Length: 461
Image (cartoon, rainbow, N blue to C red; front, side, top):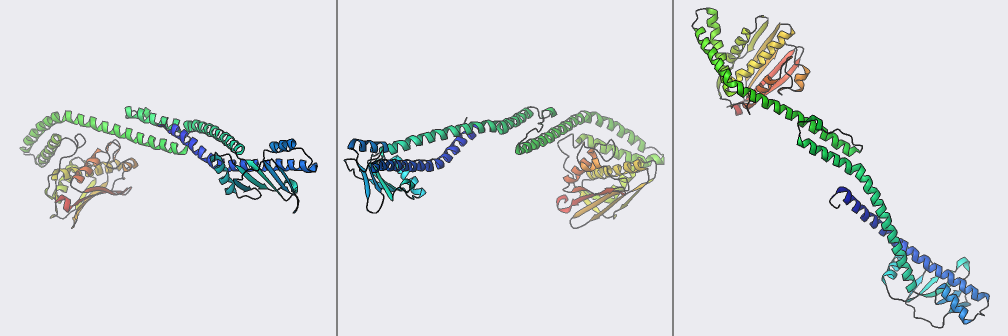
């Protein structure tokens, strides 16, 4: 029981109640001793008044009986300055100590009571007090201490027994209350955690907050949120694992299919048709990129993207290549593609990965403008500085939906367009991060959207 919360609480309650009773015990014993001595003074006064009423004419046997009933040895009653009435036995014992009960201090009473309880010697003491109802000036008695000590010990034992009974009763009630209000909810919390740990992917095992104690309720709500987030994360990872398995299965066959398409593209390059000659090289380049991509697999099909192969890249030429490929997929000719990049601007980056980032951003912008109505503008601006390079991709589309903003750069939480998965932006963010840079959303709204790519010199060099 000492290893359980309720058991320790029970033991501590008994200890604390007993400690509290100690502070009550000492004053109680002191008060009992005071009342005991005052009672003996009152009895002695009554015995003296009985002797006074007979004008001292009392036989020795009756005098002894009066002293025994008063439980004293001698009585001295001063009624005025000259007259004293003495009631005594034949023997005059030696006085060990004297106690004045007329106006004792509380600490003196407690000290004397404890001293008498621990002193086993049977002594004779003198007790001085005031007569009851002003029946004299002073009354003195002598009495043995053995009956007083026996009465004090008996009273102390009864107090201790009562204190123990009260402490045990209080502890049991508190034990039951703590078990119902705290231990049982804590056990329920632990049971829920254990049950959830057996199958963290099972949403049915998530705890439902039901606690009535504020602190336990807060703990249950925090655990509920933690389990809900963890279950969602596990399901997300499971989905990513399934995607990786699917990519691994199709990568080999897709590469073979693209290789056949590449051979057909090579034959198209031999065509004398000017339109074919203009399109064929770009088709072959796109197929080569697709083959490289399948050989490396997607970022979320593997553990991570391959490290970028840094080289000097002409940004304007790369952007124009992206625009040209996007124009091939846009038959409306309603979108204006423009760039503000100096022809001599070159940055250090992986050309294939940077192409994928720009192509993804431009494609998202084109599809967003097409969904809005088809008329719009896509603009890419680039500049360099002492810190690195900045590339801004802006469009005049309808802006990103709220779902995309809530989970920006997170895969499978909703893309920038209806039916999208958000995988493209997540891949773009990871590719730029691999360059030591950052992809960030500058603004979005009905007037359009602006993304900024920052690649620092120190990390990309």
